[in-house]
Image (tube, rainbow, N blue to C red; front, side, top):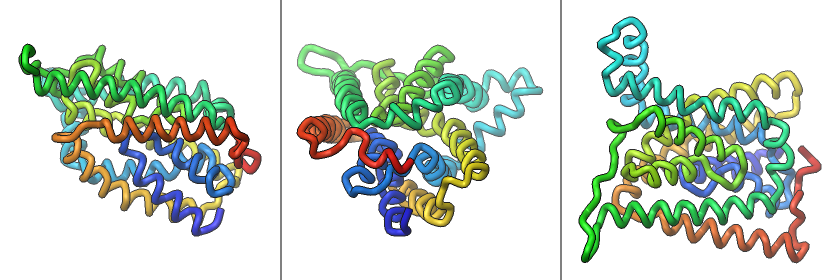
Length: 291
């Protein structure tokens, strides 16, 4: 991997990680469109450490409060009723599905799941799901001529059952094209949570899963020697800086705006991919031979 490739891929990772459009799909597609080698699942996981570092800094007060309350709840029964302590347990519960499936499906994640036809399918299908979830949320928030505004849940109302469902949604993002934030935010909206609550829990839930995945790939990459460390670290730093700016923008965006621009983009990109692959303009396995 060249330094120029790592710059572009770092920018793509930072720009797309927190938007509901799938960063892993865009890293894969950027390489395919440019005629580069597929950066691979290891590169994706390692550069995600950069974007998750941005989450740690942006939500540092929330995370510090949750971690502190969770540790105190281990020895203080009264603290177990505290919202932040509960959130700590709910993040753990929500991280179980992706932890189990990430290890079980490791070979598929690094191989068949990176087929461009599958990515096109998940872009379109999850785009439609996000569109439906967004429409339902908008209807509840604005009401209508014959419909009253409906209460939507906050994070204070998050239950173990809902946390686990969030976790299952997050695990779907192991398939490129699904989008971690897209799947978890869609799940949250369909369960009746506000946009802000769905996005905030989505970001918090991603922290342990992404950091664990990145560290796991770091270990394997160190043993196998199949990662270009200089360019990969450079891309990770770029992803961190860009990712932080995107989080700040996105958290403001979702309070007043619809997700429909992302829905339309996903569907159009998926259709374009099917056309390019169907006309043999682009191979469904473009770049995969390089690993």
